[in-house]
Amino acid sequence: MSTGSERKTTALVTGANSGLGKAIAAALAADGTRVGLLVRDRARGEAALQDIRASSGSDDLHLFVADLADQTAIRAVARAVQQRFERLHLLVNNAGTAFPERRLSPQGIECALAVNHLGPFLLTTLLLDLLKASAPARIVNVGTRITTALDFEDLNWERRPYRMLQAYGQSKLGNLHFTFELARRLQGSGVTVNCVFPGVFKSNLGGTDGAQGVFLKLFARLLGWAIPSPERAARRVLYLANAPALAETSGQYFGNRKTIAAPAQALDAGANRRLWRISEALTAEPLAQGDNDRLGASRRG
Image 1 (cartoon, rainbow, N blue to C red):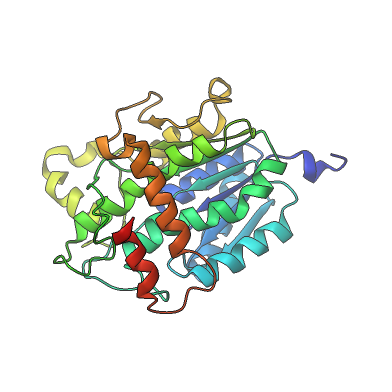
Image 2 (cartoon, helix red, strand yellow):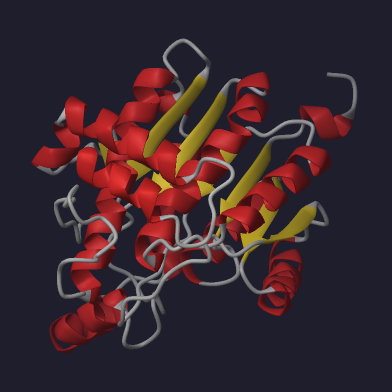
């Protein structure tokens, strides 16, 4: 590596316009990392970039815009990242959301599944060659303890009554399946992948009526002021991103700097491989709008 930019650590953080993602990006920038902010809304992303620039003093910030519900947008932003960055040492899959009612992505996939699981799955696999070329490199997937076992017969919520928290939990459990299977596939590559639960913190996930909004309403009277800020929650993610002791740690589920137990389904290697195959089918090109044949693959396993 011959230039200063090539020697510099480079990171990409999704959902970086607010909350946890913004706090992670700001901390990385303050530490001298070149940071790409991947956001859904350009105006909010530009505002976040200016805030982070002011707080960190860094000018090495780069804005990327894509709706992670839309696979066409993900493919375009992956190309943009590859064109902008000659190296990528850290990918933080933080973006996540919840929906009070069932809605479909441009590819006909239930949106919580599309954004929370298939979005990071597709983005990561598209950037794997860049990560491998930059090794040692790390992937950090931000998970949750609100997990619901995947119903492989109805991933798209076509048979069951739609329930926001269950759809959110099911999609986020996909992050663990993805983490464990990807770690197996990346052995010996110099790229590690781990999942972290950042804890309960002040967030606008899904809006005030979204998954975390509902969760916080239930506990706010008891916890009140004790609910951590995004900046505090970001410390758990940054530990996985930076800790020298974790340089070779992969395929683990972390809480506060310690590994924690994963739900039983995510520890099933067969289930991990099954979801990987389904995810490949659901993100294969070309995926036409409303392509129920591929969604049917989830039922056949």
